[in-house]
Length: 114
Image 1 (tube, one colour):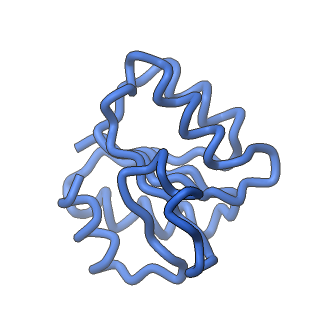
Image 2 (cartoon, one colour; image 1 turned 120 degrees about the horizontal axis):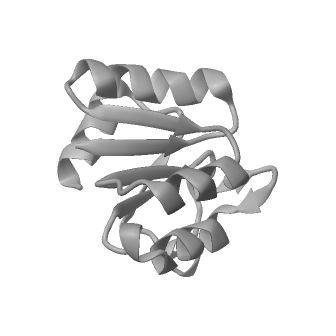
């Protein structure tokens, strides 16, 4: 499975990608919205884990922009957030969500769910 992790904290992004790669997935990272758009414009992903609190982009808007690009229109996009009290309206563009901190087992379960 080809997976993109979009997370502005490099330590977290790498902490998500490393176990995914060790489980046989092709894992890539983007540390900001601009890089995420460049990668999603050029590559098809099966799953995208998107921090909705990026400093340079609103995660919900970024998700919509990713979905508009036909190459990733059907990708499973999972919101990643530090806030457990998000409304359904805030998450409606996503296929699911995870609340930080995220255990490795939880992440792998979410990957399998995509």
